[in-house]
Image 1 (cartoon, rainbow, N blue to C red):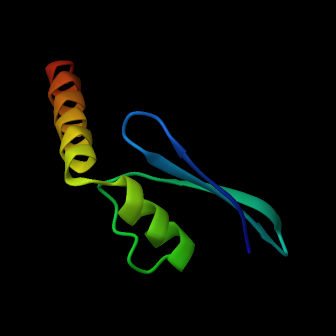
Image 2 (cartoon, rainbow, N blue to C red):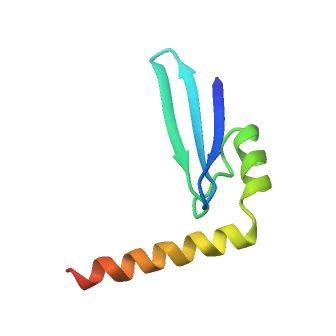
Amino acid sequence: MIIDIKVIGEYKAIHVAEDSEQGRHRVVYHPHQDISDKDEQIIAVANEHWTDEVKTAWQNKLNADKELAERFL
């Protein structure tokens, strides 16, 4: 059962807290991830916040991070 959903940061990361029989579980989703099989609440939040602009900015950040990392390999 979802307890809390928060959208955090410039790239609109979706932080989800869920309770289960094993206890509290937290997961974070980013704009490049496929969430089509996730709870409807998560999909609705993503559809609201993950605009094309946000997705492009996130992808640009991932690409820049990859280029930076490759310089040190």
